[in-house]
Image 1: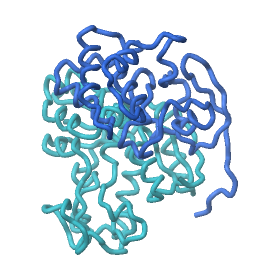
Image 2: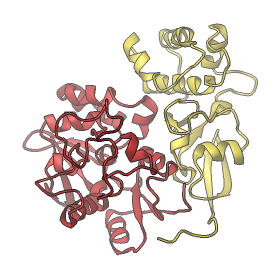
Image 3: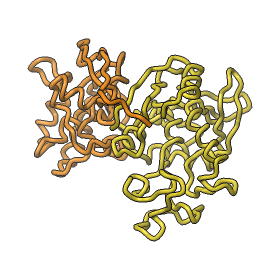
Image 4: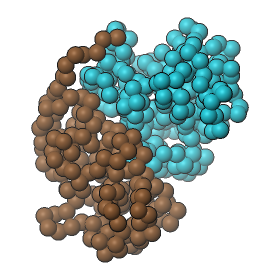
Length: 166
Length: 230
């Protein structure tokens, strides 16, 4: 088996936070690395880089996914929303506001992923029971242990029937 | 990850033809959650990826004779929350929802779930022998750290457990992986032979037997076309 001795790149077009962006990248660039290294959208965090911690969670077509296990070239034609795309200028998304109001973070490293997962949950229109909320949020690990207040955010958003992004 | 190339394919015919005629080490990619992870560990090192997400295999429908058909590129989330699954197949729904996370279930396809590889530590550790990764090299789990390994269905060659929750339910429900040839559906594989089962002996054939490898090879090349009749 012979591997290519130089990195091949290709120009791709991504719909990112409401804008159409063009970049030239290698096929093996993950969506996570493209966001952080090419678009400088460093709100999306790299944790385990293996789809286990949820720090890299973003929304693609309204659904929460692990950007570390997705290739950027495969996201063309889809609507990508990162934590930077949730607020409207200075106006935070209701989920972002609730995270502050409920003190739902400590070190903050997992928070952007937690917020994106919460918005994804609201988009799914699921999470009608405590068990289902916990199941739908279990892809985001918080090593500070802020789970109790994160749960309160999700519960409040469901009670207030807050819209996600759709 | 190694330096690979990627193309998007538009039709199943194009995908199969490209893979069968190519001399490169190809892999199909849909959700990619297992494949990309394995590529990061250098367990999988494909030279070329064929992105099959554009193919229309995402339908979930009832069969005329009763039962359900799951399209290979339907996601685990769409399957678990589909009204037909929710209403008639609670075992399948609970099995899917007991596995992975929301993010992964949103990405993972049903076909990919069948094709995923074991999570045995030694399969992931390229410094150790593993019959699944490198047939004939030996099994490090036998005599190694194996508290979480298989009890049933093992062989002298492998004791790795199957990684899928969904597949357990599908096996219990008697699902049949099928292949589409044009508009004809062929039920070509017994479910337990299709998946990466704990035992590496299938029908009495060891994993490194050429006939068995050919079957796996065909499965890997055709797997995305698999549909499931329950």
